[in-house]
Length: 153
Length: 153
DNA sequence: TGATGAATTTAGACTAAGTCCAATCTTCGG
DNA sequence: CCGAAGATTGGACTTAGTCTAAATTCATCA
Image (tube, rainbow over the protein chains, first blue to last red):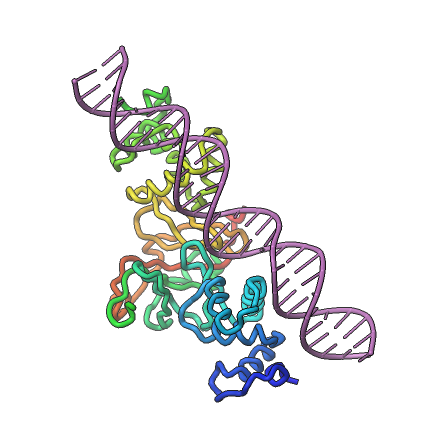
């Protein structure tokens, strides 16, 4: 029986973050959908914040106070292994997590440290195939600077 | 008097890593060229390895056993502040240092973790100016994959 | 040449991110 | 119901990076 029902998690509207939809999504990816994992997924698979592991832990603890730090680290690694998340090296001193699996670029704000996605087609990288001696698995443009306007926070 | 002479450092051929040439270069950048700093510079300003701070420390200790870890960290930060080095976020769990100050791209090898420079003109990034709401300070392409051939080590 | 102040270096303590482990709990299949 | 496998927990441990006080070094000035 679905974990969501067993743990009395209410089925909310069919948004991607509804616990039952998430539980099903985890199961489709070969991840057993325990309550802790659904709680972690509820945040990390729906955020644009590119949080670190400890930031995920702090956020999930708000609604799930007993979740342990090791569980969060284990779960993030598991989600990454199962193709639900990407682990990126974009911020000083920590790995960050990104739920958007399709290729895209990143912008890192010098003043706030905030990371945001740049759509794949917003930039074009030419001549990538001409890199000799390199088998390219993936590439992205990392842009650094200052964001202007409303998003500045 | 130049620190190199005071400390009995022999003037070698005029390669960029000759201690005296390095001392002069440090002075030109507003860095007092102590023996420790020249030793650190001798490695880090001439390497293509993109080492971490602890890797720099390990390497410099081979020839300068008393150099302390704090000195290496302090010196790398000082070099970065004075425009002699760049500090990059490319490797998991550590910052790496890059003496090449001109814009370029990077390749990170999946199997070895090795980082290598890709010349700026080997790739073209189009439409960078069309990113709305972003003041771009710098950008680079980060390519990940596997290097083929001799460099594999 | 010696004194002085600033800069640098040292040894090591401290913090934070990431990993690991043993014990316990939970889940599922037989 | 039971046992095995998987998951979670609390916390120890490791490593990268920072910070501090004391000692050393260096440059300047009288």
